Length: 253
Image 1 (cartoon, rainbow, N blue to C red):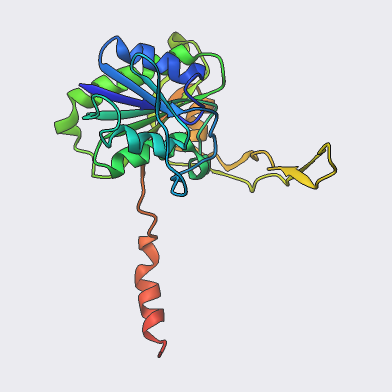
Image 2: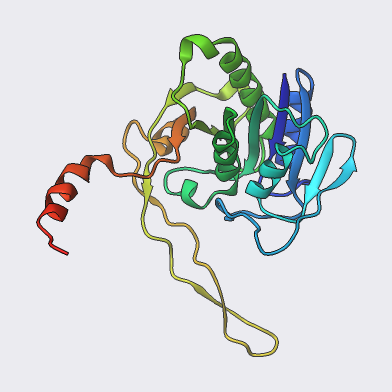
């Protein structure tokens, strides 16, 4: 079993290094990650210049691009041992709950893997302390997914977004399958002082959730459970197709 590991916090982030070390104890692992923090990069690809993957240490490569670039290159034959069976993205420094997945480079890396025909997990720690807990959870779930692959039979193009409470492993309440909750709109942009007087701003911080009801990822993590949310890239709103079809039929061109 060959595992490709990537993230959006950068190659030297504690999360990915902890994850890689844990998975390497059981599987043949290669790490391909951005050369710096690319949080919020979403599914962006670098198309305006060439990319330069560099081997930093045995089995680990940095790329001057986005998380999606990293997975794309990692599975394209550029990296040694590129016939990977599965991709694990993370461990993200902080949550990817609810609407966070729209912006998340960690989730995007996993989606790119699924787009290229490989199963994928996106793993996030809801905090910045117990990375070992998230790594143990990732290894456990990966083992079970491999063992149960035939009986589980997930639909194509599905990834699993996993959020782990920032707790010692033995303090976790268990696992819950969840749906995405929703946050309020992001807070306003914040003015930043520029030494040359140029008008500049920080993007506003995330807001608190407004939909954190039972069954959501927010609720599960709040109560100490590992949240597993199935995500797919089909953004079609199937429930309104019939209504829109009738509406469009009434329009003459």
